[in-house]
Amino acid sequence: MDDEHNLTQDATISNDNAAASQPDENDDDDSHMETNLDSPTADNRFTTAGASTQPPSTPITIPPGQSIFINPPSLGLTRQRLFEIEDTIEFSAQDFERYWPFIDNVWIRNRAASTSKETNSVTEWYQCRLRKANDRTPYVPRPTPEGKVGRKKRVRENVSCEMTLRVVRIEGATTSYRIVRGGAKDVKHSHDLDYVDGVKRNSGIMDTARREGIKGYQPSSTFHRMWAEPEKMLESGGKFLKISDCRNVTMTWRNENPTVVLKVHDGFASRVSTGPKPRNTMTPVTIAHATPYQSVTPTRAALPTPVLPQDTLQYPAHARGFLEPYLPQTNATSTAPHVTLTYASSLDSRIALAPGLRTVLSGPEAKAMTHYLRYRHDAILVGVRTALADNPALNCRLEGAGGYGGKGVANQPRPIIVDPHARLIIHPDMKMLQMVKQGKAKGPWIIIASNTSPHPVAVRTLKAHHGEYIKVHYGYHPGEPAGFDWPSIFGILHNEGIKSVMVEGGGCVLSELLKEQHASLIGSVIVTIAPTFLGKGGVPVSPDSRFDTQGQPMATRLREVKWQAMGQDDVIMCGKIGGMQAAAANGNGLLDGIEEFSQQAVAVANGPAAEQVEASNDSHA
Ligand SMILES: NC(=O)c1ccc[n+]([C@@H]2O[C@H](COP(=O)([O-])OP(=O)(O)OC[C@H]3O[C@@H](n4cnc5c(N)ncnc54)[C@H](OP(=O)(O)O)[C@@H]3O)[C@@H](O)[C@H]2O)c1
Image (tube, rainbow, N blue to C red; front, side, top):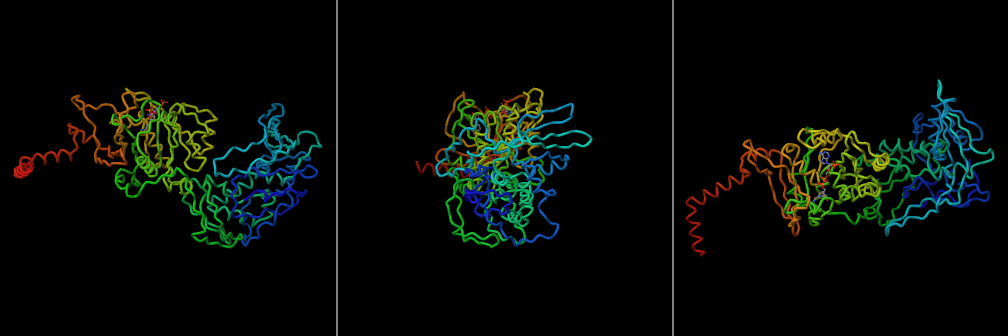
């Protein structure tokens, strides 16, 4: 839905226009930040009057005293005063905090603030959002991939406003705020308050929408519930609020609660919720829309079929069974996550041709299987050298995972990078963060040493993508290089709700976890073996040698081993490692089953049947 339905270009001045934008059930614009505004009026003041039709008349009845707004008194008037700043305005600290969020869409704070010890005050300068920066380069839309619809943004090149103000915070027995206009008395805004409200919503109105949304209400229901109190809606600057604003403001909450079934307010009959809108292009399908309170039951044929991203993978149901015994099982009593070690290896147990070199070893079928494994785990863990070498996406592209036909980020594993010295450079172009932006992955957690301080920009960028740095004590273990203690890492992850971890590499991390002392931490091992030799220069997966009590070297074997051919060339080996000590204690490295089998085979060879076998062999000859 085009934003221009909100804001016409033949505008006339009218701050008192109480009409609001027509709600649009099909409002697809996901930006509440900026709208498409570009035409000055005759007197060069930008207004939005005449743009809107009436707010939705609503059958939602509100029992007295049950407002969803927490508006301070005389909010409409105070907003107007804080917009015009005709005279100095004094606030107590408490009032400032109550009123300012409702006008913060107009004023942008400059970076510099000054402190005066004499007056015990801090002064901050603000400028109108529509002030044009001197160095502002003309907006050139970024090219979008074929088929992708560009966002309608930033078309207000002709609008500029010189209004500024000062906010002085005066410390004392009681802290107070003084708000004073900046610049000359005759400088006025070049637009009205409605105009900025159309450009950007204020935090106060967005907070109201968020409060309602996180109670589990559908965005369209929240929108109509808010309009059930039109005076409060208008005084708080919600005239141009859109359903997409109500949706966007709860996106984080939705991503964290993908399984919540959204409800509607009493009196609001909704259309069927289809969950968060996939960001990819959808085949346009016309649905008969309800007027706000009519219910529409779309027919199956009329429902838009989401177009899955092109890189979506399928892994057939019949190929899943053999993996099942090695996958995490729900166990409410366990105190540590199920850990699966999984990687693609050459015949000489190398996982890359050289350190830092990404090497494709397995075929497409094994790749699809890896994504199925990701689907079945809560997290994927890699060492920092893998993250540096491969720039991995660390998400799940299996059909049904979030972003690939699934809701929110459901069934997307949490990417975890072990990076004690915060060596990974966090930037928005890295694949991991791109995936988050596209709604196809969870934000990564980066495990760093407690004495490491990542760059503040990295922290901000990570947080902006729902990621976190997790500080863990960087221990020293006698006789070993300093490093994290794996039981601590898995313990912390378990406390954070991660019940299963798929460790995908690289060589250093896998070799460490295959060490005898970590056997009890590992639930299963799933290795794709490719018919390739990578040579001695490759990155090996090889745990330290083991020795028995006499100092004799001994083999380490997995138990419950299963082999499965995969695609043209590869073979998958699944096994369990916990308890391998018992198997290895036989000393000969043979599995119990194999030993039994070989004993039976010897018995058969020496028994009465042996003559018959020989006779039949002879007759063949
Ligand atoms: N074929 C496959 O399936 C596969 C899968 C993944 C990766 N790979 C390949 O493997 C290669 C990378 O493997 P890699 O062995 O070089 O590195 P890696 O295992 O990915 O990362 C090793 C680094 O992780 C940190 N680390 C690991 N264990 C730690 C602990 N207990 N405590 C603290 N820090 C710990 C250390 O960082 P610091 O150095 O900062 O101390 C260490 O240098 C790449 O070429 C990649 O392409 C292949």
